[in-house]
Image (cartoon, rainbow, N blue to C red; front, side, top):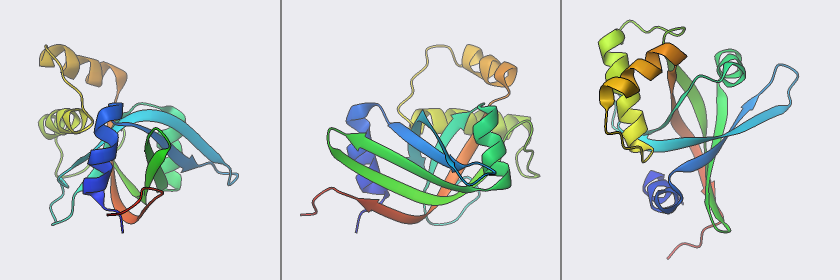
Length: 150
């Protein structure tokens, strides 16, 4: 059975590009490409999560109303999907344990987990604030793949 270590192994060569699929109000699927990675759950707990940073109004609205999400990573013809429930923290989705400083650091953590590098973190932080970016964290409920297992 695939796990989040398999996600990292498959996603790394492809710069952690993933397709995120959410559900619209009419039940249809909305998908977009993001950089997503695996990181320790900032809420605590033993299991890591999949995270990505976004400011997509449609994606965030869908996740607020219907938090079921699928995140699919691929490399060549191999793919792995993580399904779960989204948890959002951002300027429009405040959380009691995440003040502005904790959000700033979380956005960096997710960015780095998704393969990101930055030579000027002050510029990165400013852009995140100006864009109103949010971190989306997905605790896996189901992970499946077409990758052969050893």
